Amino acid sequence: MTRVLMKGNEAIAEAAIRAGCLHFFGYPITPQNEIPEYFSRRLPQVGGEYVQTESEVATSNMIFGAAGVGVRVMTSSSSPGISLMSEGISYLAGADLPVVIVNMMRAGPGLAGILPSQSDYAHATRGTAHGDFELTVLAPSSVQEAVDLTILSFQIAERYRVPVMLLGDGMIGQMMEPVEFPELEVGPPLAADDWALTGCRGREPRLVSSLYLDPVELNDKNYERYRRYALIRDKETRFDTYNCDGPYDVLLTAFGVMARVCMSAIDELAKEGIRVGLFRPITLNPFPEDACRSAIARAKRVLDVEMNMGQMLVDIRLAARGSHDIDFIGKCGGLTPSVEDVVERVRVHLAAIRAEER
Amino acid sequence: MQKIFSHPCSMIEDPLHYCPGCTHGIIHRLVAESIDELGIRERAVGVSSVGCSVCTYKYFRCDMFQASHGRAPAVATGAKRCRPELILFCYQGDGDLAAIGTSEIIHAANRGEKITCIFANNAVYGMTGGQMAPTTIPGQRTSTTPAGRRVSQDGFPLPMAEMLASLRTPGYVARVSMHAPSEIIRAKEIVRRAFLHQVEDRCFSFVECLSTCPTNWGLSPAESLKWIEREMLPYYPLGELKVPDGKTGDEDEHN
Image 1 (tube, each protein chain N blue to C red):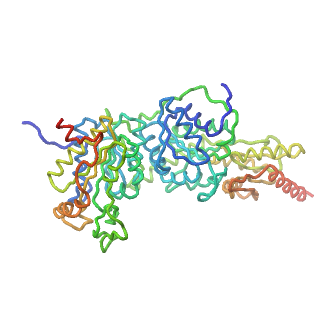
Image 2 (tube, each protein chain N blue to C red):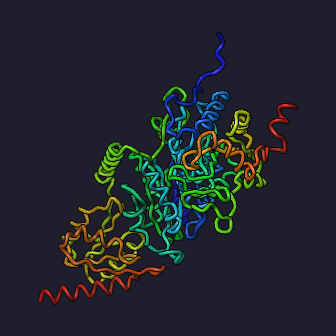
Image 3 (spheres, rainbow over the protein chains, first blue to last red):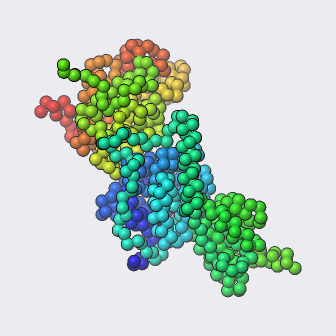
């Protein structure tokens, strides 16, 4: 494998093609335009199909049609565009269609700003759209991880027949880092022989639908879907820790690029012999609740750091089950809590811990 | 004895749920007969919409999507672009296609998607109980225009076929009506041509079908047919409004 220097957005598009995704539908929006632009260049070279859509509403329905005929398909957008796709995502979930949706988050709400933010954690993990369904949500913190999680997103989508969201932010999308891609040039086609709409030759006609007018049937269908979510929780939950091998007084929690800032803060403090740990969920949904609780249990103080008003904070509190008060640093609008912000707040907690010990 | 008439293979034989006198069933049949005659049932994929035609997926004996409100042409686009060997058709009503779904139908037509859109226009929202549609006739009473549609407030009926025919992208656009047997025979030929344009990989095709809604119009089935002729035809002239490369299907046949 060779390492190449690539922008996050372009690396995600290339990773998708290596994973065998030859179909892309999308509408331009900052800060993710390098993804559709890359696909528009590359897909004709590999016999794929690229369509620039008239809106994100249309996009979400085009990927519904594409996935319904059994091909691997993805789209990408940024926060306001994802809001427009929300209805379509509910239909995708309701019809059990495997698709990958990339959200390179920008600041919200409304048109707000185009700078990086983590403003859609709650939208992605809880309130995506109407109805009983969940999105599986993966959050990379480096360009390499964006590549790896893009490939994993397709695997999860197809294994469990669910829509999967890769939740990055403008920073992941725009920054350049060295990456390695899997050797496989273009992955094998999607295995959908037993459900896709491919014409009814030699079999009974099939239906791709989210409509269930019989309440019992719909209730059963939703329970069946939630059993698949339970399997995802069981088998696909992922997290990472930093500096958690030994003892620590303060635990930081952060996801995506925010974790990188926290790691720098931890390294700064380590120079003074201060031990601080980091817990980083990689799957935001399913949230690695048990692992998070174990990490919290070993700390005296917990500080959650996000580029929003405290959206993951809710999950950290749930994981803690009241054992700790969770402190929070958040900036939004395109601002990012700095290494200094984190270091300074950790020092406040360390002083409080020393005062308590006296 | 020679069999000269039978139930189309591409349509199930169960009773349809439509109200007595509704002409959805006839339009379904024209679609099914066309699919049969062109021998494309096993590669046909239909897209049902939202409204009275939501249950269309039950009636065609081929693979079917059930799409969200107004987005059938986007679903068909996604499917057709990824599996061009399939024959994609959308079946939509006027609320679905001419109100919430105007963006999707216009852009599918403008991109020249090789799909076939069947548009049942009965000038009213049927499933939700007879509210005004974009295609409601001026003066027509509906549950949300109790004094009749006022053009000063609601504008004129939206001429979808004319709008799509105005696009520069080649396509096949026609309007037919279900109000008389002669018109239905004519409609059959036009629906078949619309599918043929896709089968021959030629262009986007669109057939607007003037249809009845006796229940929400408050008319008998027979009066409803007359109402189409008297009230709808002045706003919705029939015929092939646009043909690819400037030739009508009739000219094709005659040359």
